[in-house]
Length: 139
Image (spheres, helix red, strand yellow):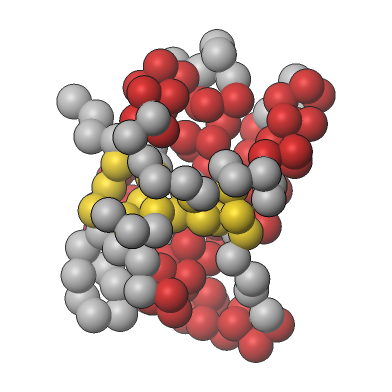
């Protein structure tokens, strides 16, 4: 396993001990190579979900560039590619964060995603028509 993309669900679960997936995500994190890779739409979504816990939002922001999370750049022209992902999967109504991660996976050749959104990410495909490797494995 090389690089792993980080989605909103595990990020929130790791930072919130009250989250129902906290233990499974913390355990999975121990087995993943660092840093994990993500993007600003994921961070924004996580900050919104954690908004009632200012300490967790502060931890979220401090985790960027600390060896835990590295943000992959998204330049203005890439909005078109993200929009194409959203159009392609309009039937499942992808969130902006999901579409950005699918776009980044295609752009950077990353095929592993740390997500709790198993339903949607099991349906997304890379530009090479390959399914994503989804972690953690939930029962």
